[in-house]
Image (cartoon, rainbow, N blue to C red; front, side):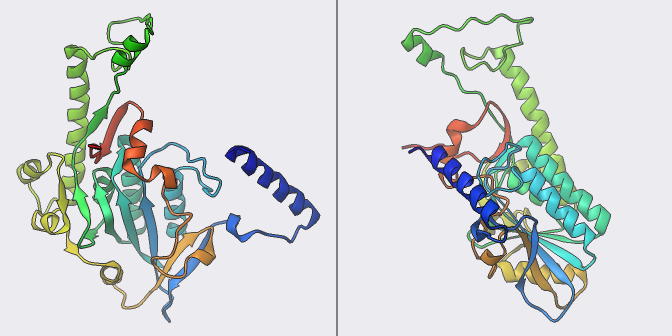
Length: 327
């Protein structure tokens, strides 16, 4: 029996059981509405909200049955809107663990954070986890303060353009593709032939413009710490350790979750606060490192490895750290 048939059978069974017993509820399916869960208790009414951003940043839908909001853009906006409605939310900790992703998706999340800050005045502290690279750092630039774990990897400021070429494979298989087009550039980036020097120049101009956009975003966030000349010298796509990033002024501090929690309270002007999060699966949130099955990750278990994600990437432009698999 295939995986899809099994899932369909489970859904049918659940529907039948729901009809027979309206009060029956399987907890692993989560709540129907997002729920606030207190992760760290406090006598104070003030709250600091923890939001996770993990996996590849993309606007594509995630077919995972447990994913209620389908894509990361919807998830981020939903949580920020809910936080903006709660006057007791005094700060946000954005935990970022991503190698980056799509240019536009990264920019939308960046803008949503900026709009939230403008609307509410609530400070946003970023905590870089294992990897906060490229689009992850782009998003972090919207925050008021950037902290990374001592062993985190960050940086990778730059743009990568991916255009697979399967011409040689088709030649070996004896397959030919006929293209009828309205202009010579209409099939630019085609996977069926080599890219011309003229096409390469066009795509390079796009990459250059998107790269400048990345630099502008970082400069806006680090304008008192980095000059444009200093930034360009270090923004060649390379990654940095936490210590290197601190020395280069790409981050503000090295620490752990407690560091970010204290900083968020300090920037909010409060001494104590509850730590809360929003989830469809409240029983999974017993502490800050508990399983986050409804976190803002767009990666399934099989997709979490960058080597497995690479074949599924579409042609396009990415703020993404994409190390090449040498095996």
